[in-house]
Image 1 (tube, helix red, strand yellow):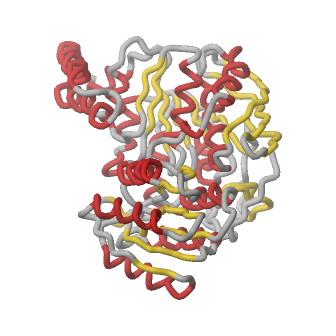
Image 2: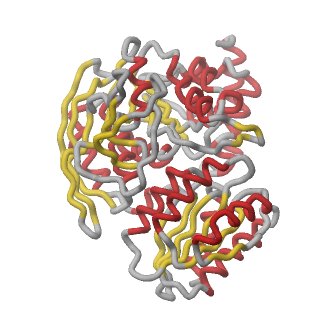
Length: 475
């Protein structure tokens, strides 16, 4: 902590910064917090973090952070005053959220790719979150600012956000062995609420070996739901924990999915276990978003000060959701004026691209063209995961475009797969983003195919959202 006078002055400066910029996006998500920390120092964040009466909840993971955070904000806002920030994964953004007045609870998205830039231990120490929520952990960008970041270090950095917690709740995906193991190791220190599937959904991807996070041997799966998520065990004794919150029934209709969610969790504000069960319906937005729904439900039930509202509020929020819940740049299916069905959105890791192709698959009614944007130098593991998804779709025509800075490595990835498909390479340069965006839009406009999927690496929001908007408006 810092002295009271410096803290108060830093807070005034930070709030003035919030009046200078729009808080709807861009710098508004981080600039006020940056000013606050610049004046008050990082240690002043600890003062600021004491202001929410219940405490703060931080959401992390490889995929699903923004969607889960968005859902959780909607749920908790029905019951209490919250401060929040999402789509900006920095300590500055957390500080910006905490600068908002009179909150009982803080809800913040926080992406972590490595120790050096994500500083998870520092964030945990200063914010002292009463909740850390894990969506899922899978192979992500293997390069961070040009430096190789092995998966083991990436996983350890995610774990560090909750490693030193001594009070509160960890929310972990029971079906994901990596987040489940993080939870199991912390059960002696804090409460852990797990979520998972209790339904029959089979993964259509080729099964790949998954290492046990405890001993390193290969896990044995009796069921796979999505990539590495499923029912698993290891000869060392590690196995999937029982889920506290489950989807126990699902009926998939063309326009909505009807689900039953039930569970018993430890509720932090009331310091007791509470139970609930409700039926609701959701957009047909993919199996990965069923996990985001479960994750946000578990976090909501864990931290609402009004647990008697869970069933009514959850049904109200979920049944009102549309595809607009998807964050900017994320995968969306667009029906163009020319009659084409175009699925497009960011997929910087294999898990995301697999989710995208599963989502697109339900819309395909004709031959398919796949426009794939590649990873960069040193990201061969990401490419391998992407290739598995491309092979599953078995496109009639494949177009490969560099998705990051290196055109040369994009061409190398193309050369590895060009003979498998009817394929072409377009070397749109990263430095000329308008040329890349307009080039992709032009490819869609001139395409002879009625079904087109565009996904892979690239600018996480700006590029994808602009392509999406141009396709919506120009076709």
